[in-house]
Length: 245
Image (cartoon, rainbow, N blue to C red; front, side):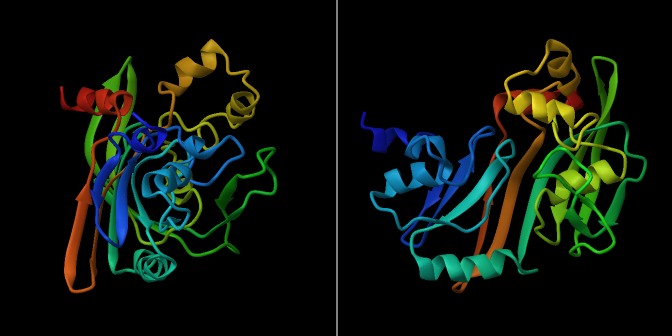
């Protein structure tokens, strides 16, 4: 098989003349890197398309898995980008967080901006002078794993700020399982990027990648209702299965 054939093997959920829907695996960055086309999602999509016109319509953090839309032209990217940033699109995520979330449903309404007190350069935080951000969460199940209380949530963000879901869940005291930046100790992220994670770090994180998955996306475009869903990877799926047992 050629590199082009392998670039998106098993990841394409839908493709038409205008866009491609991909189930991005956890651990793969969306944006181009210096390590070649196969090292990023957009690089792989462009190999798949056979040209460099593919454009990301939405983006996910490196460790977040799930639905990404890639437009085949700049015009489609502009149309869909505006749509997905508006209230006209509904995005649903699965998340597993530490602790038992008390309220069955709640809205987290907290502005976000740069965390200028953190040693992690990319970290943001809740701050009153930040950009407005709103996230709806609903408890799916409360369970335990290895003696630790956990909650499975369905999460629907109204806005699309950087790290929004991760920050909001940490803000209410329920950080996402495996989150190296917004979890219990941000120094784990610094050790991660330098290859110095310890066995104790890995045990505390519970998962190699954080437990956040973009499961469903729906929107109306060009006279048609579009809806896409996808399942998480094996490690996240095993933890989800634990809450059903």
